[in-house]
View 1 (cartoon, rainbow, N blue to C red):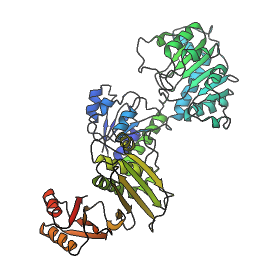
View 2: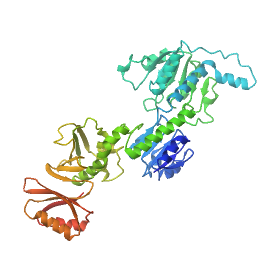
View 3: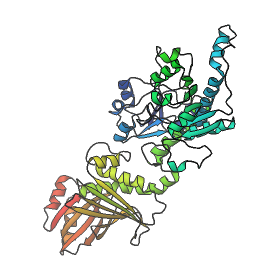
View 4: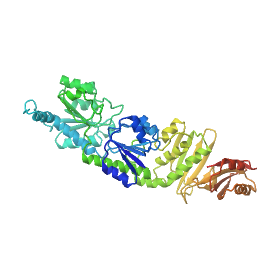
Length: 520
């Protein structure tokens, strides 16, 4: 396995990859999409921070790439939709830099309140810049927190600790949460009209881009302040400059910008009432160490065991749950291939997990089954994009959990249909992975082995004739499972020691009494 680490990933995380036997390649930020595409061609994982952008073009030839890891919280520099379409997991490590980001927002709050940058610059220029730098006390002031997640919640807690009056708006929290926490929730309009200082702690999405528009910032108190240490683009920067020039806003502090790095000629740089820092929210030694090790463990576990943590395009799966579903995974892959052999162009797949299923997380299993079913046709299909691929190809996937296991601890039932024909498969892990019934006929075989599925006339001598023909072709029979369908026909699953070539299959198909023969 090979991982490419861009943008200065902390060595502690890279050491975990080396300890796990990975090949680690280290690079400075790669800004050229063509150069990044070339670098990713032989990688299984790539780690980035905020400088290297993962675009659709970068992923075109990344046939081996399984994971994109963001050593931090936001994934706005990664085209998650393009990664998902190619079956690539996207992971982040949002918990590792929570404290660092929150403390940076608080430091900007203090810097605004006491004019610290201006005072420092004036002193270093040889002056004594006391006049005009009268600040304000934070105790008793109203802080409006937009986004009450990990970072916003930490900022709120620290602000309460210094005596501020805190309220919040969170576009991602349901209204039912209001009043249940220590921080009261307001609507955005109410919060902006109420606050002396507004600080943002939300991701940048289509809905949150320019959340603080000119109109919304005009609705704030005259003399209020804005802090953005979350993501660039949440604040309309042109409108912010205009409102600062008019004196409607007294000041602002920005750690993130719509364009990063901030252009040298940006008018933001020259404004006296703006405090600017170069995206330092997560830039502490402790935070960088934490996010690198958290991310490394997530990526290594995902590739090694299927455990999913910190993934933005896959449902979470703990290491314990991964161990529980792990034995089922090879069976799901085999059953997907078998189902595709039986119904080459399915339009509906019904999956039932019967028996004792209370502790079984079925989500990754269904995704893996669908990926195997579709992956036999064309394109790259993985559990990451399996359900989206199914929808795009017109395959309806329905899942049921519970019901009678028919004497088995756990029984997996599949029904796959193309609208004209349907086939049913039942399988279990009891005494090893095996199919126990097909189309209602009891017939046992290991779907991971070389298997010939035979449908023949139910008459004497068929087993011997087929066995003799296989012997004549030099093919050894490992197991011959036979079941009567009750309609004058029989079903057989013949496990053989090697793959059977097309000429040999044809020789079997033309035998008297053979109605159909397929190789799994």
